[in-house]
Length: 386
Ligand SMILES: Cc1cc2nc3c(=O)[nH]c(=O)nc-3n(C[C@H](O)[C@H](O)[C@H](O)COP(=O)(O)O)c2cc1C
Image (cartoon, rainbow, N blue to C red; front, side, top):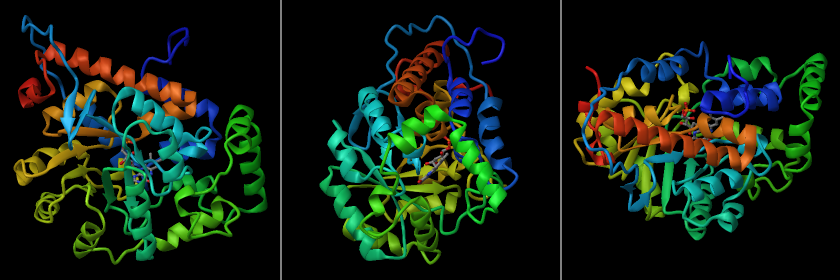
């Protein structure tokens, strides 16, 4: 919020700055950071900045409507809250707050496997079906149990994340000691980082208990804290996962299946072949393999490869409603946002997430109006400067 009175946040960047002030550094960096040299993370945002919209005039834009139908659901705009792990560490019961804001805005919310709140806690708060994201973990019986719980909670869409057979390293997390192995001095620094943020301390560690991975509690009944869970999760990621596992998922899930983490046209074709209802063109927000392209760069060739046979969601780098419109113009049917809602949650809780969704919808409205389209389905590459 440079060069202003800083009275009210106006955009995602403002919420990022508020989150930076409110959160202990180790949690801000966990949200904000990317893997390795952070080049792909930067490229994601840059790709949206480099793309220009084509302004048109006198097109009768009196009926602009950002709503759309997606995977059998009418939603107020083609935006989905991406699965984000540990959001209950950004604000008290963060997943519930995010879900409530998404419900109010009439857009889907996705609960991460590694959320703080459980599927059942979200079910209590939900007024609309939410989506559930699954990482495949080695204990397949436990995966099946998670799918059963999601189904019982009314989830209609499974987001199956396929770009994490191993974990990319995030240097910021290592430097902050978030990955463990801290020295005595390191632990003191981390402790000071926590106690020097009293508002967050009161809200989350004191007011937001229990701070456990709610969905994984059954697997680890004796776990004491997040570090016990983290150790289990890290060793449960399954590097043996392959396309055949998709049949196994299909056998245990009869709702929509969304494959998240596709960056290659050949993989996109394979996803069509196994009958995915949608794919998420994603590089995990630049958090996995640094050096892969920005999602916007690969979107057109993936669009061509799938040839309308599956729906396309794109994420990584979306920070505004203008970016959403650009993504649709490049071939997406919908977008996911990760950091945008995480910063807003960390800064202002449910109210912040509602505000950011409202801002994005208004930005979409303006972008559609000034490029001369009234309906989401009318957004094509024609609205871009080429
Ligand atoms: C803090 C953080 C945690 C994340 N946790 C998960 C997760 O648990 N499961 C998952 O599939 N993706 C996860 N992601 C990736 C997001 O779902 C999404 O792909 C990414 O954030 C999109 O990029 P953006 O943050 O630039 O919008 C996470 C992203 C962030 C920033």
